[in-house]
Length: 334
Image (cartoon, rainbow, N blue to C red; front, side, top):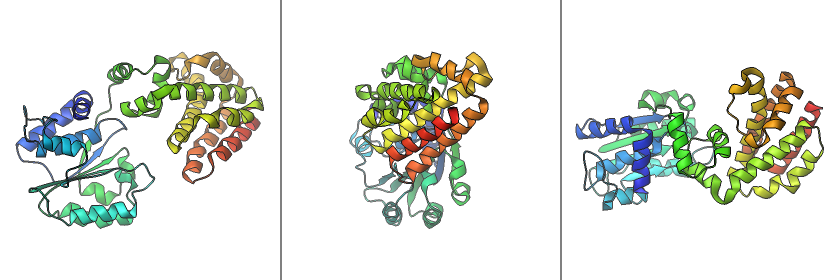
């Protein structure tokens, strides 16, 4: 894992990481940062790298070695003085906030330094964020707090104003495509994956056992039924689509794919053949849909599809969401 973290920061954010290593060498590290950038840009890995550098027993060329006892403890989330909070939920829970506040109120256990890494800063409720402000502004001892977000605009202004904001540059697309190929992700899936995430580890996870390609093919077949006005689109949900999803994350990916496949005809209408094909296996069907459906029909379809994620987040049954949306789409395209 150490090699993975250091490889990611070297490949994706070498300048940002090197700058922080120099700041640490000069003992000029601020007490609070907000890392902001697109998903997969390496914000979390840079934060881990900073923590490793602060505790590393064998610094090499100004960087953490990644293999010493302290580096390994941080990577395994086993250092009591490096507090890490990450969540896949829509908000950071009350018990997580309680734990963070409790840790903020304590001095370092094993030394003089303490690092907090809180990913998903935009998920902090107003009350939770305000309750942390005192600790961020007036830390006890040598404390560094690193908040991470993919959308700075969703972070409370009071948090933004009290942290040093570090904007992470966008990843170079060509370099990223090389990383995707090196990870064994097929060219036919690469563009679609890039429209959904920039996280290589997430892409690799989706690709296991051919899940992503199967999902891509299933959404493609569903789309073909829908644009033809074929009622089989409704039956296909139960016979195929529901059978390939096993968890909430996969449900979200299926919905995102549906949005992307309806976005492509709209892009083709206005951009022509300059569009990056996300579903190359059914490009003929997408071209036919581009000719058949009006811009108004496509807009209405996309508005409908974009509501699906909100419905899923509202704990509405996934099957009900798909079936209701499909029936409405069939009505739009007829």
